[in-house]
Image (cartoon, rainbow, N blue to C red):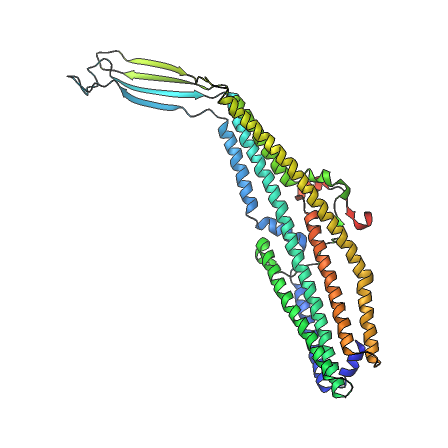
Length: 444
């Protein structure tokens, strides 16, 4: 604003302010130089830190390992049972409590073994393997959510800081307007109301700056949840949010790999494994028991061998009903998977439409609205300098220019959030296998 600089050069107070402005500018440059020397946190590096920092992924790894171990254990035969006891000890008569005088009294030691069918043991083992698959799919889901939330928090902090930088630069301009208004008022060419209006404009910006600093603090706290102390590092430049690294025309194909769908699909496999177990339960397990009985010295010792097998007398209302219940569970999970697929398809399409709309609005602001707001401000400056305009009109134009620039940043922040939801929809390995082409607004 050249006219403001001309007024402010004639004021001693303005000269002092000018000196302080140079000092602050130099300090800012020194701070920026120090910041550039520090390690900067890129979005990709933040994602790597978040994956290392997360304990939820460790928990799922442990769950998967536990399920594999349980699968091995389930495939083994049950442990043999050691049995020991006293049989037929007299408690009345002359031989009461004697262990040797009655021919029926025996000290028995034996071992029993249940022989579970190989198919049944394999079915139980496979059930635990399916649980391991669920844990692996759940880990992929957790990783996908982790990356999206970390990216969203990183981008939120970045754009909040951009808003603060814009407000600070506008506040410097508004302060110069106060100096100019005071100089003009002392020269008898302006009104005191203009001075108050200029001060009110600065106060308004100061309030927005306080609000922006609070939002940055909140964004850092959110980022701290995923990165720990690394959340305090200065941020690097953001990625291009106008490009998605997958074919937007193949959304349904990509969503078939969605980790939440994969979790439900693995839960369906668990339900099918339960069906296999229920089918094998229709075949009873049998047991064998061998025992050795020691009697008194006047009597012979004895051995015994016994076989047992459950007698399924009501399969229609027991084993068959259990099998029917497991089949119903399979149908339930299948329906849930289909419904979840529809929900994700709808949600992803909505995100994509909002992202595309935001990109179009950003172009509109950059090509039309921001240039028009800037031109209006320049026109009001020229009119005020020529004595044909008022400071009130100039402040209004300046405020509208700020609002237009802030709104453009807000739209870009919303677009960045939608971009993060879409870009990190799948975990890294799946994205490499499924997302084979790039999509941008220029390819629509």
